[in-house]
Length: 158
Image (tube, rainbow, N blue to C red; front, top):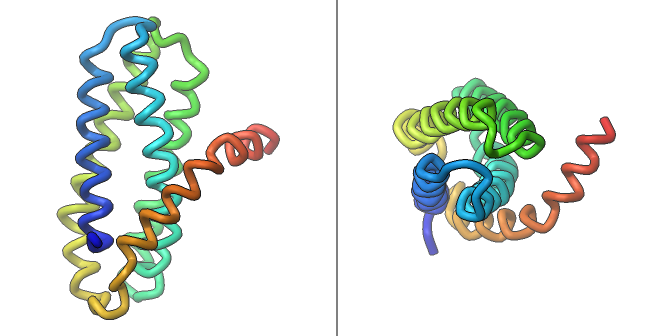
């Protein structure tokens, strides 16, 4: 079973590939719709599971509080962008411009997590405290995938 770091990094690799695939598409094509749907659903479930497993553990450590808050804030910003993109015409220049901003921001976020947050987390969270979190993350992600529509409806009502 992968560690929490390996599980998150594997998702990041999938997300990077999907971002590149979307960037290579044009207009409101079936290819763009399919890649966007895969990206949207995977990132939504990934972020929720990451916050509930990894960041909840990180925030319990003094150093981890700022890092966790920063990353969760970035999740919210990207979530807002993704929801805006969902409502836009995929063939518009505005969609592509907003997508490019999302791609840039998310790639920065993933790099920051992998190169800074993971390094520090390994220093402050003993392995015995986080053993099994990779499996917990993957199970939570699967559960979150089934909650995306419900959470979206709740958010639209607010």
